Image (cartoon, rainbow, N blue to C red; front, top):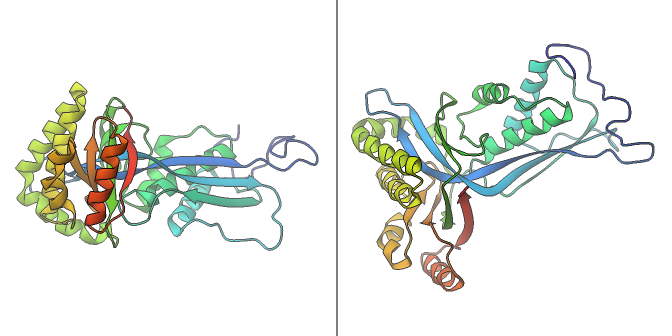
Length: 311
């Protein structure tokens, strides 16, 4: 294994990665899941100088990044990912003193941009995971977090479990495990939200509603601690209602008013995005899915279904 800090160009071991004469070089991949917004977003503690804390809501939808080593056909092409992922590549190579071998990048994503699915962070994490594999290095979470911190405020999609996470400080406050999971029915409203542009407005709101957020977070953590998804769903509904006071969703009031009609355990939102939907502790049957789809259609939106969390 190559030592960190060496400045010599990286060379693959003999016989790798081509797999032998005449065979195409195998692609190396990095994958990262996205989110359906958050089950909680608010201050960690009530007070005059709040930190933005989040409990992201992982979803079984992903970002993929591939690197295929080998000489490129034709003129070099720019990587197909965005500026932030390109920055992550540069920071990774600089940290380890490596030079990327010739090859071709490609990407794929299930995650919509700018709506609250953590697409940007998932792209960066998938890119870094791919690079760790390209250079046969163990995936170092500290390095990953350091690179994320240099680029953007981030969700905790680098973990394969729920977590209470300080998105600006890139610090995991508490790991919450993998016991909780939900089935969801959700919609994406038109438009996008620039998280950085609304940060000041959010922090002012957190100062005014600090004690309410603190009670909500306490209830959420108790629900995770006892493995009670219904309690987590109730707390997520409270967090969504508080968010509605500052960054309202057009569909939220209708969802809340009809929650009991559909037997949903809670309502969730992307607090700084455009997603809103229902949480179910049990999988909705075909009839209920039809009713939910008709309801969301009456609001002017196409309904989607996805599994969130891990339980």
